[in-house]
Image (cartoon, rainbow over all chains, first blue to last red; front, side):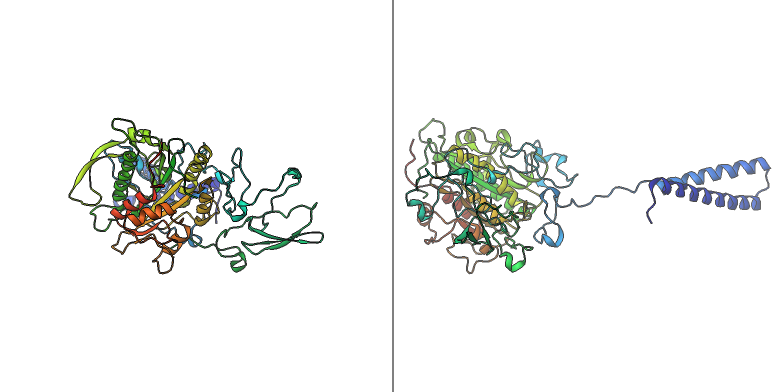
Length: 251
Length: 286
């Protein structure tokens, strides 16, 4: 049973007073048994003993538990699941130890892990917030850049467009009829990959993702299926593991 | 591909990803030092080599042939805790990519250090990188952070030799998937950054605390001890010019060899780094 904080304190107070009263009566009995003193002294000893006992009991019951050090949890900002979902996170979290000069920051006591492990990005190339790196892989080069080539991985952007495939050497088609406003970069709605096989089926097109094997059709003028990028990019096919597992790099 | 010469007009880019996890505290077999100390020693030697190679005339400053970055992942110094940060110390602390002349002028210190090859011999060398270890191995995050610098660098040098990224590690990645993306895909993102001369090169050097036979520049993942096959899949093939350099250095390099070294010792690490950072072997142009 979990009581609200105010109710809990009232219960503690009542129990404390009850224990204090029982203890006072017991003390009074013992006192009368062994000493014969005046009534006022007896009352004074009774009240003083009850007050001290009540105070001590109340302190013991309401004092905060002592702080204990716990291992820092997994870094929350990464979104990485802990435990079995991350079987490679088995290296124990240890305080950093450095071999550095005594006047070097590494030798300062601030190195101790007084707070959970965190992402630290004090670099100019990272975002100013310091929480996550800049998403450079989603950035487009400023000028003179070709669109992502067929061999580009999902999310990757080529800084300097250069298709290394043999088709690169064929002359580029004239672009006079190219309508950028109606162009659509085909992307697999299942895994987000751009490597697709396409064929014409009336009245639209049939696609097959060479990465995950997903097949779908699309007719011009209709919305492109919403892309839900799943994990397992580059790992086992989604068909094999249902999109829930991921090949880990190594053990 | 990978034909571009390095010059001051078209400098190169070298990025080292240095594992600074807790396991780097283990002694490196046969060296009497930890892997963190050994890797830092080798890196400082490599940086010195780059400076010397880029010095063409006596009493002249080092030429700007490279922009160099060293990113440590694991324990951080600038902001204590686990993460990724520039591994440079001293005046360059916190800097990402540093032009070679600036690097040469701003070492942290000049110290007497043991030779990489012979422990009994020591010499004074400049120090840019300190040995550090602690925490886990956020390798994906290291690629994400370094990738931002590589991306920006390629914007400025679209016709240069592609960036060379060398990952030095001794163990298991602990942050995969990072932002829901697994390590191999982070590598694909990184190697998807290209100049007109080709994609970014990603090489791997795996260190082992236990004495094991070294495997350098393998041409096939078959028969490689763990984590060799997975590292092999993520590693770029050696460009022809580097393969030629490796052959000249005595390595058995085949056409499909990749820039991977497993269970590398200290001297092997230095040789691999030197080969991996040596671009087309022609006299550097002005």
